[in-house]
Image 1 (cartoon, one colour):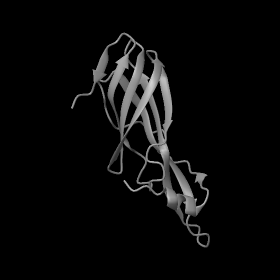
Image 2 (tube, helix red, strand yellow; image 1 turned 90 degrees about the horizontal axis):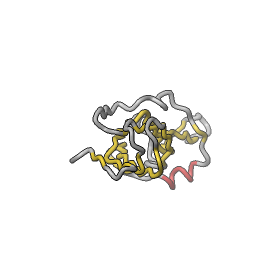
Image 3 (cartoon, helix red, strand yellow; image 1 turned 90 degrees about the vertical axis):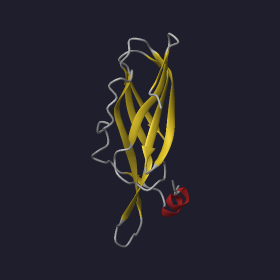
Image 4 (cartoon, one colour; image 1 turned 180 degrees about the vertical axis):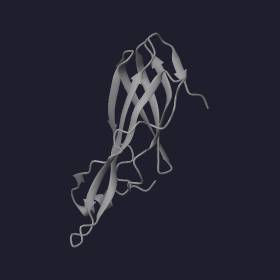
Length: 139
């Protein structure tokens, strides 16, 4: 994946650009997973490209995630795989996530990449629980 941090710095400070799909539910269905992803969306920054005609270039400023523990035992570690523009990054969340807790995370994944649409593919790959049990999505 091409990182464009230097281009973003050259173009100047951007403004946060709200996107209508921000907060759209993830298209990934994970019925068997004990952790359910409620939201997985790209955060967009818009940078001024040409001051004469107002054209803007959009860059990713991270990924917003919301997930919930649907198991009756608290989760202590959740690994989520993030796929966007052909690249993959992993987000690891540690803590105590009780049953039914909604967990919101903003991750700096894919920051400064060119914006290529609102929906990354996010999936839970594994989880560890307070009782010592684990869950894995498999191969």
